[in-house]
Image (cartoon, rainbow, N blue to C red; front, top):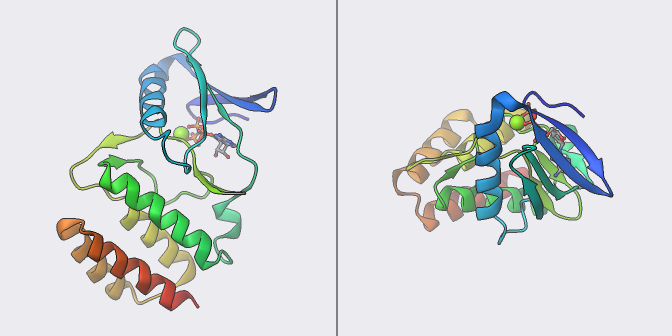
Length: 175
Ligand SMILES: Nc1ncnc2c1ncn2[C@@H]1O[C@H](COP(=O)(O)OP(=O)(O)OP(=O)(O)O)[C@@H](O)[C@H]1O
Ligand SMILES: [Mg+2]
């Protein structure tokens, strides 16, 4: 497989992401964020890295891309994804591109987010709000203005209470 920034290979059942030389800084960013996030199950296990070859060896995740199942995923999966976004928000890690995560959220035995090379540290990260914007665009869960006003109150102080409110509202409206 070939991404825009790397070549992806499967070796002995594991995945090797080899960055093109012009993207060496992306290699370091991906390694940093994957390392930081190892305590959480929503990233691939990290097996090793080679800074000379610009390679990162990680768990190969079997599953389907969210883009292929977004119209039918259920509340259990949605909670897992929203919780992952919330965790990233709390850690001030902005993954980037969560408003079009079609090939970067894999749904298998568990939910896994891949591709952290664009990650940045942000005071007011938008992982959850971007994902919900994507979800609402695809599923028309609620009127746009309702979502915007809930997201505004979430982004005011990123409180747990505002998060739970927005999460429960999404769940209530999908079924
Ligand atoms: N750990 C993994 N397990 C399974 N599939 C993966 C894994 N990492 C990446 N992939 C698959 O390979 C594709 C390309 O990976 P990735 O996005 O990390 O590469 P990239 O060079 O950054 O590409 P892009 O230009 O799309 O950002 C992903 O969309 C995903 O489908
Ligand atoms: Mg990428």
